[in-house]
Image (tube, one colour):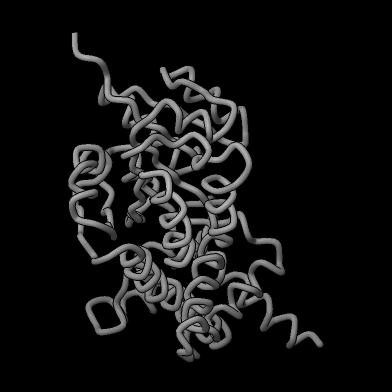
Length: 298
């Protein structure tokens, strides 16, 4: 009997847990770590092997997937004490699949190369529903030969792999996607406020915009949530906020002014200030209306 392929998986949040479970269902031996032991235990019940720290995961895996929330966590997990770098084997490949921006990828890749290991960035498109079914869109950046080495794993997790360019390019493409979608949600929030203050129903807005240049995914998926006041998280407001901060930060690194993104970020700041960080990002519209109404009362 052939030995199972060993894959490390670090970060078992909403997306990561489903992705790790999907690998298990494809007969992969999955070695996991998350700072929350309860999440590790859930994967252990499905056959995953739990480790005490990222170093141990790296010691037992030639492919290590990271699905982490922000650059500082990636830096800590890979470069920190008991991190991946301390346990990584020569010719191992780290696949960073979170949305964290290009700078940290380049920093971590340089350190891993000192030990003969490799890193590719491969952030994902779509959402939780696709994470558990292997239907993600994967935006890969890095050396093509290294990407080819792990293509079998990427194909298990995604139905489409788009090669974006050298290391960090996947992150830039993902941030470009999130720039467009986050700004669109902010624009619809303003539209919602304008409509509500003029007594116009959401259904009328949807019908009027459907099929026009103003049509969008948010029009059909987020505005109905606003109407029903139903904000159970699909994509959390705090994650959209983080992504827009990364966009604005990347612009600052490059000396590029991004006024639309910066102004949209103010609406996400408003939603965070109102305590909506763990609600679906469609709660942006609810927070926007509350802000306008609070000014009216004053």
